[in-house]
Structure formats: structure tokens, C-alpha cells
Length: 80
Image 1: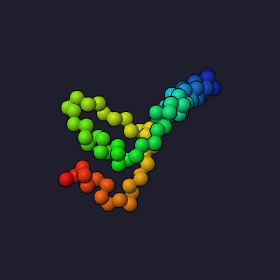
Image 2: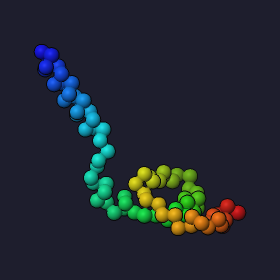
Image 3: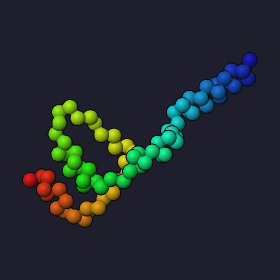
Image 4: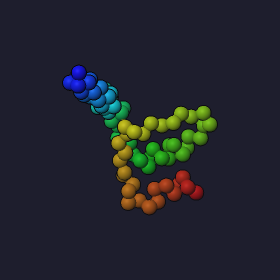
């Protein structure tokens, strides 16, 4: 009986951990999900989008590039 309970616990824990896995292979096949986006332009576009009913932007799978990293004036035209 103890072996059966131990086996059931192992199966339950293994199933629970497998369900929590974040290894969804379909995300890596989608070119939009792996797109590289210029951070400066992304921020400027989001600031310019002032609609009250706009949807949130999912940025979890976006790879940002920082082309203006050394440019101290990158956002001057937005923040005036």
C-alpha cells in the first residue's frame, strides 16, 4: 500500500511539473514572436498611440535592439 501511495505521489508531482513547463515550441516557430524591434522606435510609437481603448502590448517575446544606446538625445523630440 505504501508503494502505491508513493507511486501516485510521484506521478502527481511529475504531472504537475510537466503542466507548469514553459517550453511551448509553437512560440519559437512564429516569426512575429521572435521579431527584433528597435527600442527607441517602439517607445515613440507607444507614446504616440493615445487612444483610450487601445490594447496592451505583449512585450514578453519581443527582442529589443538598442540602436540609440549612446544617443542622449534619442527621446528629445518626444519629451518636449
